[in-house]
Amino acid sequence: MNNYARTRALHQFYRDVFTRTISLPEADALPAHLVVEILNYANADLDSLEAKLLDAETDLDVDHDRALKLMMCAIALANGAFDGRSDGPLVPEKVAQITRLVVEAMQLSDNTHYLVAAIQILFRVNEIDSVLFLISNNLSTLSETPSVLKILLLICLMEEDYNQAHVVIQQLTSNADLIGEDRMTLVMVVCCIYKLGGHPDSFIDFRPLAEPAPQPDASRYEWLIAPEDNGKTTVLVACDKGYYYEHAVALLLSIYETNGTELNVHVHIYNCDAEMISHLKSLGETLPGLSISLSSEYFAAVKAVNVHYACRRFVFLSHAIEKIAGPIMVLDADCLVRKPWADVKAHFQDNELIFSHHEGLPLWEQIPAGFVYSQGGEISKKYFAAVGHFIDVNLACDKAEWFLDQIALSFAVDILTPMEQMAIGREPTAELIDIKHSDAAFSWVVTTKKNVAGPYQDYKRQLNSKYLPVA
Image 1 (spheres, rainbow, N blue to C red):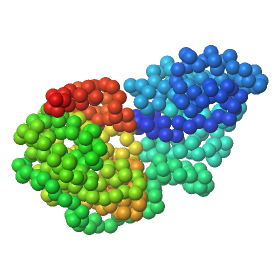
Image 2 (image 1 turned 90 degrees about the horizontal axis):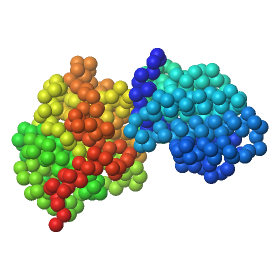
Image 3 (image 1 turned 90 degrees about the vertical axis):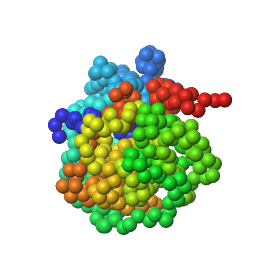
Image 4 (image 1 turned 180 degrees about the vertical axis):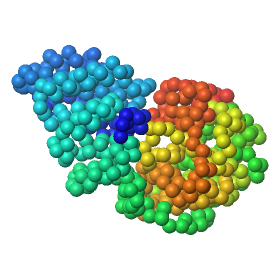
């Protein structure tokens, strides 16, 4: 580890996971409504809270009273860093202010709760050096503190220090209560064990990567509208009925708006019905010349249905490569295309596989599922057979865990030889699937907040108004 560039580039989502819940029993001395605003509702408006905090009466001595209030002010300011609260990281001046508040609070009160809260706050605002300084100087004190151990494990994994990560995992797994049912931590643990040469089979089963992938079971799929054999690249989108109407229709409109008839579209609907078949055919008449094909599979997931929806498309892809002639591009249903693919592709090397890449991706997201491009050759068939087998086995064993699709995509690369891996191209995520919605990107995507006002929603409304005007 040196400057922790990869950890600093990590998406705010991951900094929030282990810092959203801060335990501060000392806050019971403050008025309950203030505590709830800051710790439960994550109020970040310190301008309106500071005077109330500082004026609040407690039964603490002077130093402990001030330490508590400084720490609560720091937490309030740090709440502004949460994913979705701003357009980017907090400005350096605000981070420096948070750091000063935390430091002064800790100087006034030698309190383990404040130490843990300080680490969480500083990690949330991306002060990685300070986080590691506090951890390394208080290891014995923090050895049984779950949130701190999880933060340290995440940093180790981001910096690819797997040996140190293994030490942290040993400590976490020495007491079942330290991990509990925390599924994000379990993802980190099993992925690290795999990187260290193991094939864990609990939580997520990695053993399929150590065995030959069988032929995909094609009998589960029903082809409702056959694909055309015209040699064009086919955009594959998979979703259920609700997502089809809410998002996928707009994706099809955006493809037609930007690429005309230069791309095909294949829609794979989970549990398709006659109404959807009719709607898709009608939509095809609204977009003349666009080749649209359709398939379905029928299943009833008893839990984690969204994981099934995200993962099953890649199991289907291992079959679709055999059925659809020409290259295939997998996009999320809530993606909106902004540029002609031919113009974008002209800047890339002619790789068999193209994935997006960003420095701040953790090892289980090394290949994001939001954009996958395949020429459909033998390397692609070998790779997606392994991806599909990995997912199939885990879904069949009731291991429908979040990130399963991206874990499969990221680690199935290991079944390819070094020479075969040279056929993989990696292009900047911001150029292919941009969450910041820049004009230069091939497509725009949304993450956890899908209906926030802005360029994405404006574009979606424009498409609907142009192609699907209300009578």
